[in-house]
Image (tube, rainbow over all chains, first blue to last red):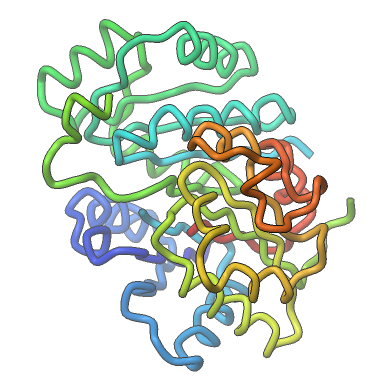
Length: 63
Length: 118
Length: 109
């Protein structure tokens, strides 16, 4: 499965438990794409986010 | 369609409303699972206890992710509230099993919400 | 309601991401895609955000709603504070359920 992991706050991108969850998903053979929403700024960033959402099977948007 | 949805909640002031939202989907015939990270459940109220019972009646569950909790928080959530216990591995399994994952609200606060918020 | 593969359901739980929400809806429109948005709990405060009216004009009435119970729990008077939202846009959590049934993709803010 291809999963998109979106971080709304820098705190979630740095969260050790989320990192563990992502690592476990990868260990199970799933593809993870990560997107730092808290850093998104330009239209190109948001266009990329929309593309990633449609490319992924499932999106997890962390706090 | 009976979708499966899991709610991930890390910020204490968002717990009660997160569980209300989880119940809202359960009554729409979706399977609704909630995972509480870090936080102590709010003080008991009839409203919240009823919501929890209703979620379970609809074949959903509310879990405490106990490895993210200190001992006092874990004991309160398991013993006082009777939450089910979940490991991070079980969170991973539910993320994969569910059709939708809801990271509900804001991140955990660095300082626990003061008692005035409970 | 049939599932629309070109529609993104956005469940807004954070009161801190209005800029991001507007930018996402703009990006969807550039790509010929649609959005359906539901605001819950503290994000219902965003009806008072300067960009809320802009957002409202970007979506058909049936694709934007707030949780009226949450709005009232936050201390607002739905009839007075609704900022021009219609009765169809002041909804219960069932709107979230309908959204999940209707959209092709889903994002939480």
